[in-house]
Amino acid sequence: MTSDLRRQLILSAAKRCFARNGFAGTTTKSVAAAAAISEGLLFKHFPSKAALYAEILAEECEADPDFAHLLGQEPSTATLVELVKGMVGHFMEASNGSDQEEAQRLRLMTTSHLDDGEFARLLYDKISGLIGPVFTASIESAIASGDAARIGSDPLNLFWFAHHTVLMAALTRLPAVPCLSYGNAPDLERQLSQFLLRGIGLTEAAIASHLDGELSPNSGQSVTAESA
Image (cartoon, rainbow, N blue to C red; front, side, top):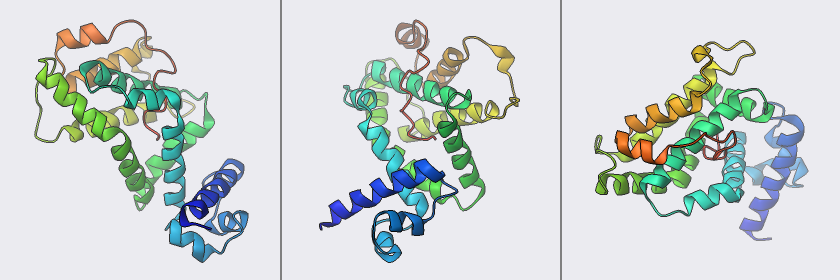
């Protein structure tokens, strides 16, 4: 059996285990047993349970047709705005209580930051590889077209600043009794998107041109894998 095939069999077994027992209830030993291999062989492909889970989340993103379509767009101001709208839509959807699996991923991501950080580091690395190139290219395109001002020397940092802002906004809404109501603003997603777009340097004219109409509840909901 080739190494790639073995890796896919391990991932398939891990998906079944995580679906059945959740992240906390799954062990590398149980995944190895489900894949009919030794735990030592599993570790040759994936160094930890967190690495397995992060790889599964990345594969789910790559397999999502809407996500693939978005990442296949030409770098532009419009693509940049869609990425930000999608990220906001995903996190707001994950924090509204309608999808318990996504809510658990948010909790896992938060716990990782307070623990050893392994899962968060792995997921950030996956997100960076998937979204980073199109985001940075779209920032450069927006600057070149006059739709944005350059902020700092590393455009990928702007993506992370936006990501961390919307992640924290989602966490305030995650408990059964939200930590903040944000005034129960009916246009929270739009307001948050405007805030982030201004923060990454877009002009008011570009925002008005590209951020129009209501945001779909499911807009780009897979854009952060992560949810994370």
